[in-house]
Length: 390
Image (tube, rainbow, N blue to C red; front, top):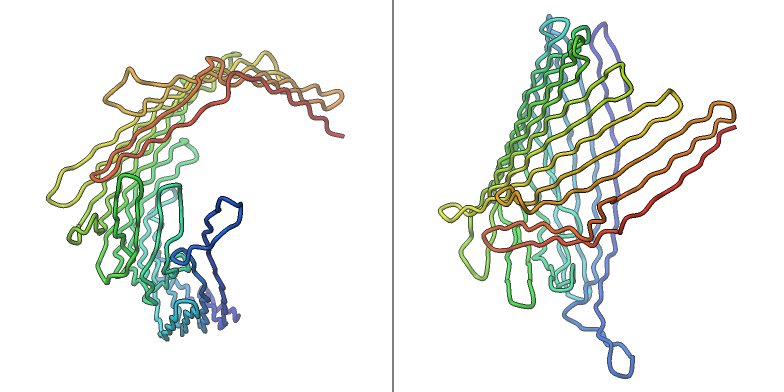
């Protein structure tokens, strides 16, 4: 690597080689009545993927008045080989890549700034898309692929504005990212009562992803209260096939937000509360939409008797389905911490699941599936931790 600097201009230049060889084999065996095993040929995969990349990367940083620019590029030659003697499969592909990017930053004043970036990249796919015969990913689901040594072309753009005022204890950040991907693997789903088969295949289709975010926080000196709020909105498109349908165009919209309040009173008692909301809308273009919403509230009380000990009590209420407020889960935990200065002894006693909630369940629905997450929880229990430093 070569590094250089001319006044306020910096540059880097590097060349290199990456070589990767991945031999992969999978097998599924049936156990017979005499406890012997028999390999099932349709579930056997045995292939080797090789990727050799020769690259040149460079960057150049410079200023024009109050604007800072960073220009980067990567020029590479990629050679891919996919060989399988078992399936009599031989594939190879050689490609030149040119991947430029630009980052622009401007400090508007002592507390605010704006930034912009654009990046173009070309990414080959990983080995998970190169096995042809099925493999089990769960009790009822198998995955397989139609291997192709193509690659994705990704255009990524971002814009960000930030205010960070340390004196007034105020932070504000808003920004957006937009990504266009040309070429990707899509899924062909075959859903049966007892089995789901997913076959991934490559298409040069465009997919889009948009993400917009807002983060802000403010500390109020007179009230000794810290307020935080963040929100995130996402939009994504993708394609798939379900039970021999035509190629479907799908959309997913997500929204999440969280509002936090923390106190910093000089008294022995302080509070903390965090309320969050999540929403996901999914469906195919021209078809029905399915909405999943959830709520969560976490409330904590901190009691500091002195500098050596404190008690923390936390109550978490989770509502898996916002349309059914009465169906919720309440978790209560407590913690006592004691620090003895003389011998540097730390004693920590924690009680979890005080209300003895036995299980947890959350259901999410799409236009072709209903996913049920269910978990059995540990009954009420306590943990005593003692540590000593010398």
